[in-house]
Length: 58
Image (tube, rainbow, N blue to C red; front, side, top):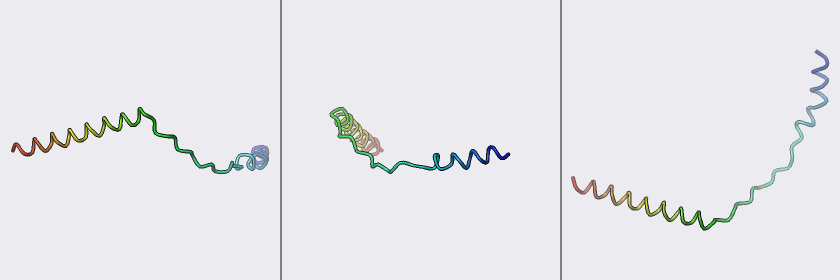
């Protein structure tokens, strides 16, 4: 029982030591991301037009 207690006392400071916080650096937007955003925006507008068309038919 004393050995685990002794080991935990000895190794706890090593486990508890943390490195300093480094802020993440945002990645630049790529051309593929811009194209996928454009496609998603167009599909969203088309879906909104389709919903408006279905509602207007009633």
